[in-house]
Amino acid sequence: MKSTRFMIRAIAAAFTLGAATLGIAHAQNFPSRPLTLVVPYPTAGAADIFGRSIAQAMEATLKQPVIVENKPGAAGNVGLTQVARSKPDGYTIGLGTIGTQAINQFIYSQMQFDPATDLVPIALVSLTPNVLVVAANSPWKNLGDVLTAARAAKDKKLSYGTPGIGSSPHLTGAYFEAMAGVELLHVPFKGVSASMPALIGGQIDLLFDNLSGSIAQIKDGSRVRGIAVTSLERSPMLPTLPSFAESGVKGFDVTAWFAIYAPKGTPQPVMDKLIEAARVGLKSEKVIQAYERLAAVPGNLFGPDLAKFEAGERAKWGKLIKDRDIKAQ
Image 1 (cartoon, one colour):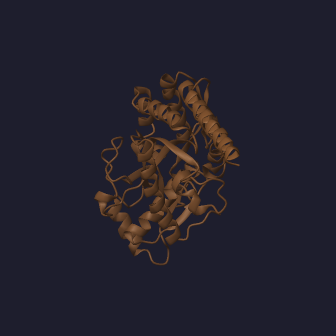
Image 2 (tube, helix red, strand yellow):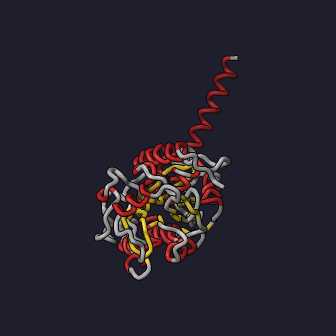
Image 3 (tube, rainbow, N blue to C red):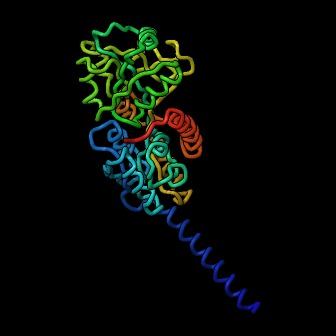
């Protein structure tokens, strides 16, 4: 009996040692073929550009192509589900956002993956503030004017447009209501291509958008006026535009962000190589220039530090969504 148990333990130990040896060998040889970066949004948008830029920049360190695959659907959930279910060998990674990693799970009732446990953080890729915009002919010149108008509105609330329910701009508007103690009417659109004309045409009073989507119109100034950016400090891309925090809403700090992930179970030596490739890539001049054109800056959080940042974001947005009873429609 003892000899049988000894044999079983010996076989198990040998199996474990063999698996570990294979894992080390895999990590040493990684990557030996092209990688795929899944971008869970359509081509040509900001997320696609951020993803393609970092994918190309990582190739120099990895010495393998990083092929971008667009897999849009369900506010990014479709593509990230594919990544979470992929083989954890480092060859399939994905681009996540503040939406997929910190908002969607509190809005959508049937998530197919848990962003906190099914994906392992590699690197924070980019950050960009949101912005509050009004039409150029609006009587409101600054955030103080908007707050005064919102507080004076009794029977008819000021309306604000966003790219859709659960989007970062939508949650920014809800956060503004909570922080400033005002009530607004949310009007969701299918992207800024629909909400911007509505603002200019007078169908809505305000617009919350990613700065990247509105910066050209704001700089032009003929049809819209920027009121304030949502980051704690001013954006270097629009240094004359104040922040919400300095305009009367103390502590207001919202930044849209994008990051890359690997499936749970990816060996740490492989993760280390992916993190290093991202760390080097984010310092490349091409990435910096590409992000500047979208009013964004490269990220500087990796691995566990990114996981800690995400946990704080989930706590912040999860509470807001619950308190304001925000649901997908």
